Image (cartoon, rainbow, N blue to C red; front, top):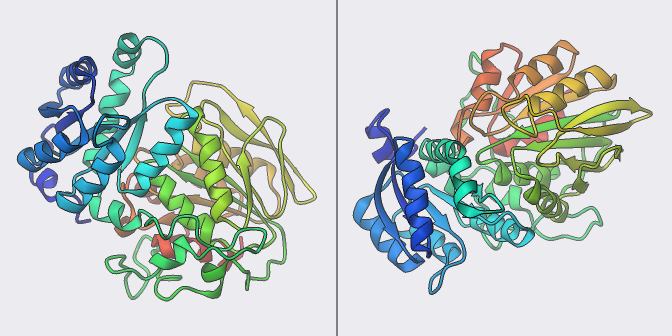
Length: 403
């Protein structure tokens, strides 16, 4: 992975961070919280224009970026930074519907990830979430920025594809298929890496129409974390409209998952919505696990899943990929596919093992196409992964095999 040369050259040193916020109080608070966690603050800025100058001067490993600022806002600053001095950016977003919308815009412009500012009293909230904020900074610092920029949909590509009504809107996934830098080997590697789907777009990925003929109803569980929103969007935009039902588990706060589902609904041939307790999912339908709870596959009958929400907070993340995959492995007796995409940590590894033990197929995203090769790496380490694919080949691989 090419990553960020400056960061990788320093090995295990603490990330160097520039903090951008129009509030002097918030700049001090965020700087203090990160400093207490051993992270080096090398500069601060009060607006987007100042941020561009400070980033150019300091060459930090990470920029924490507020969204709403006078003059040049965070969205414009992200775009300029990515054009002029590419640097991993962590957006600090309001825990609101409006904050969710602008956050996804920032991810499209090249930001690597986001951190939802806690609601309520600011000082208490940020201080309480300090450990999580520091973890997010470390995660973003380790991101492969080349991949993050390559996989970010361009404004012209966002919302493209053929939606479930058959209205042609272009194709976000197909536009990047076979793009330079997304590598594959000539033959499968020892971990089962495959080159299937890499290169010219197939009929399925080009227009959302299925040329796959499934003998039985197919259930797909997709899990992702850092870098996941853009990756999941590409997979769903390219997934053919076949007898398939999909559950997506993206590590994301509750205020963001409904908007994420709406965005996937716009680019996909599937009817996508946020998971609700007791919801049923049939052919051509997908749900996004609701933030702040786990989504379990409670039952499966006549090609329809029934899901229930659980707020057990004993897991490190919520929603957890493992919870959804393990419950699906137990409930689904038709073909089942488990997919792990880019992300930090080990969530999904136990789920992949459960899917494999239940006789399902297991796929992960390749290291070369991951923003963070953490979750896929841990899944591969279980020995239960059947295939490894570049992101451009994942959708075709989902429907291309027999579970």
